[in-house]
Amino acid sequence: MFIGSRRAAGGIIRHRLGGNPLNVLVIGDGEPAFSLPDSFFVNARERGLRPALDDPHALDLLARHVRNMDQVIVSCPPERRLEWANVLKGAGVHGEVLFEFMREIGALGVIQRAEINTTTLLVSAGPLGLRARAAKRLLDVSVSVAALIVALPILAIAAAAIKVEDGGPILFRQNRVGRRNQLFSIYKLRTMKVDRADGDGRRSASKDDDRVTRVGRWLRRTSIDELPQLFNVLRGDMSLVGPRPHATGSLAGEKLFWEVDQRYCQRHSLRPGLTGLAQIRGFRGATDHEDDLTSRLQPDLEYINGWTILRDVRILLATAMVLLHDRAF
Image (cartoon, rainbow, N blue to C red; front, side, top):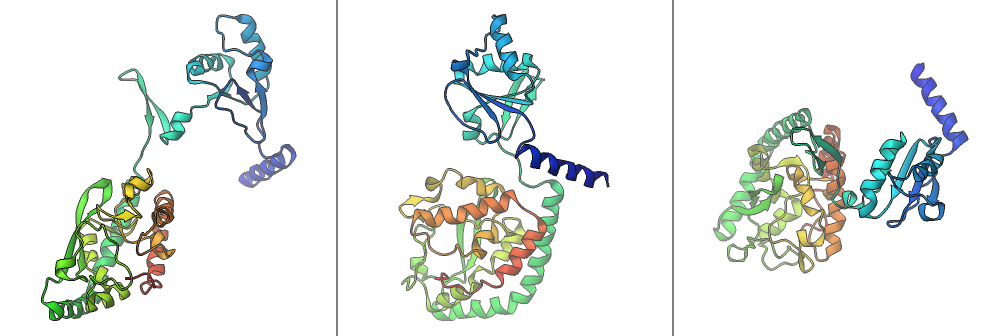
């Protein structure tokens, strides 16, 4: 009942007072200029506001402006940030100073390091806690073992077909970028001619690709060539679900993947997956244009930021519906 009353009261306040029930004052003291919805704005130069600790009259004028305010946000050039910070500390309000650099580097918070008497910016954190990692690993191992038992006859038939066609090796190994940007050797059933294999992955397979064997075309179309990656999952190189691992020389248009978007390496904070959110949304196959990479990067980052074990299960079930697809070259 108490929780229900609080929610009801919050709804009434929001309805009566608008989107923000707090009194927020934005002080613009030069660039960068910005506006905040449901807030008051004053131009520091027009009102004569200055962060002058040695001028009681300037402090009094500021006090009159921040009176009855719950939050005060100041936008100012870098050289005046410290002055404004000191003034706000003495004003007895929730004070903030706009810091564009923190947004640019994606700062998550500020940490006070008392042991060395300094402050650091938290810019990254592992996406999963210990329990989440344990639950994800348990799902990976249990499902992979069961899948391998079911898939062994299929793998045996596919291996025999590869060997009969040209007598070459059954498996294809290629360096891929894994968790924490560490390279690992990924396993696939060989689908290309022995002398035409692309070890660096610089050329994406395409429709009517002359490098692909007859058996290989069938394996790719059915995604059977990916089954050996279950061994990568058991080894801990990969997970069942996660951003797909890419080869070191993969190109989007004329650029290497990491040259297209500076956020690219963020997808390596988790183990790469045999399948992922991007794949079930249809972002698969060749990356002929830079947009082909950015369109699948967004789902990868969305997956990392919103991971749950239930979502992994849903993605695995959805993958079964897209094993046969028109971009499997």
